[in-house]
Length: 178
Image (cartoon, rainbow, N blue to C red; front, side):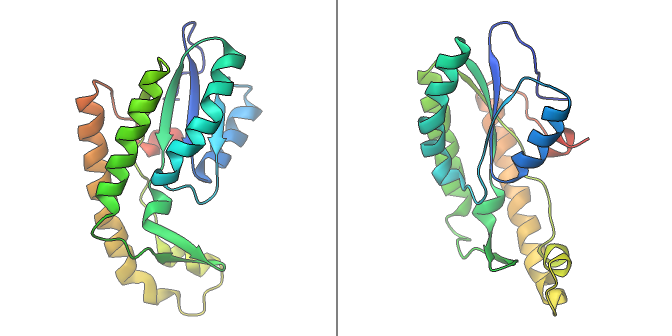
């Protein structure tokens, strides 16, 4: 497991969209000591507000600083319309919005004496998701999958650079789900 669950000087906190719920269930079954902030539909732009609303309470309750793991990005690329996923129409601003959000999160967490580590965005298929949800013409999403893959590659490259800039190792989303 790449998120340490015991550290005498800090507490792990995972901020995520709904992906975090799956990890929460795994960790609760194993009684691992991680605070989860998982919110369906959470975009990176909205993540700072969530962190500001919840991190101070966690720090007071735990009595020590946190290592905050940020696992957003999925909902910056796609959104649900009914049961199905569609591509957000933010091609030009998406990467810049994510990086601006990450830097704001880093600045805020640092002001509370916390460390931040950004986790890469997992690759996923809009076509397969929509097929699973019963879309009658899910193959129409193949071209969207190519665009999503390209955007995720760009975001993950930026995450690698950002973590390097902040002197942190990068956690792969593949390492979180074992």
